[in-house]
Amino acid sequence: MTSTLSSPTLSSRTQPSRSHRPDRSARHTAAHLPTRLRPADLLRITDQGVADVLDRRYDHLLPTTWDPVERWSTRLESDDDLDLWLISWTPDRSTHLHDHAGSLGALTVLSGALREYRWTGDDLALRILSAGDQAAFPLGWVHDVQHHGSIPPARGLTAPTGDAPVATSSGPTLSVHAYSPPLTAMSFYEVTDGGALRRTRTELTDDPE
Image (cartoon, rainbow, N blue to C red; front, side):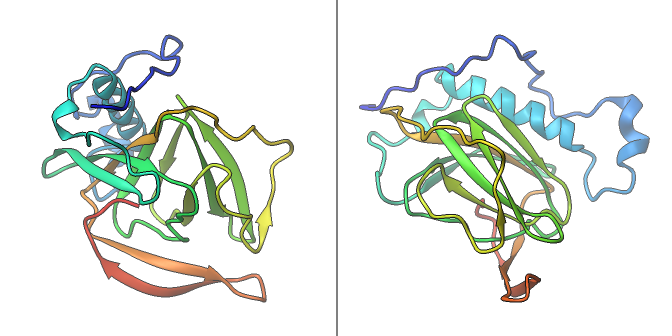
């Protein structure tokens, strides 16, 4: 590889088990979900995925050079319960507002920083996710994820108080994503002039974000 990944600070987080099994004591709390994995399980799995990428476990899946223009992704692990992906992010590329249909999701940022615009029910709220940060996506979560600093704020945006600086790392912006059950469809949305959320299309897909 010509690209070198540098580790974010992971010492403040407990290293999770590689097992995808949720705690037995929590099974009753997830009984109403379409998967046996809870958001907390997916956060631990993406955290472990980041550690495994940094430990070079997946070097055979990585490109020799990182495309500076187009987004790139590869599936790291897959079974009946879960898909685990590594995604690279580039400027001027947007996922557009979307949901994950009947799948729960989570991510951990490995390097660089991401912007997430999330529909709150009234408007779009912005948060910045930097290396080491995590986010979980319950059912019905509608958001747009972007390389940080690449695209002007969307219509209807509610900005946070203060803002993080644009990432200046020379390496790629990368994140690890988990979907359970594995992603099968996404619906896409737009914010209308009246400030409402309108679905524009639904696509069958097993590709992430």
